Length: 282
Image (cartoon, rainbow, N blue to C red; front, top):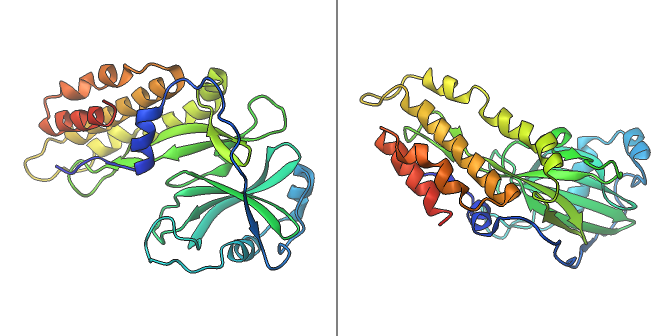
């Protein structure tokens, strides 16, 4: 049986999630000095950001100037140079500062794995990143929940499961609601249930909408039940729901309760998956 694949960030986060009581103290801002001015005038407001009509080449030139060093080890996460980027847009993440938010990858693999926020004043640029793996749609992930002019970010801890060892992939993505504090992204998932339910719940539902039925329509390998993949998708959704209950609603016991259906499944592979899920949160 193929094992559940979860990012290191997800495994770490599972041990730490719970109700957020207070924001941590601000950390030092990471500052990078470029050897030239940004390739475009930095906007001071949403209006000037829209009228700027930023293009991909401008963003590429900025990223190349900020991260000029080649990676020390190819295909190793954490290398300096950004190998590719996808979505990008301006957003005000902190008071009085417009940030360029970019979905980036440092590994050269197909899926992006970080969200980078940049604010430049002349050649001096403040930068920070947060883990967000998979396809990022910044129009869905950036929002202003309390209408104070500051945008918040939904980031993703991505995992997946291949029920047959290959072929169809079941997503097991969990979500975080974050704000920029002192130059660093901070998890505030539990700070406002209304914001979570309005902006994040639709992304969770979208992930699993019709997914089990689609998997059930894929012919399984010889000797495997057609309903197995659909049941595994249901187990994966239970896990994501359990993680939401823990992170947002402070229900630390949710993982055991929500994965009961997995542990009682007639399919051994799903019982194994349920045990693997529980092993990450015990």
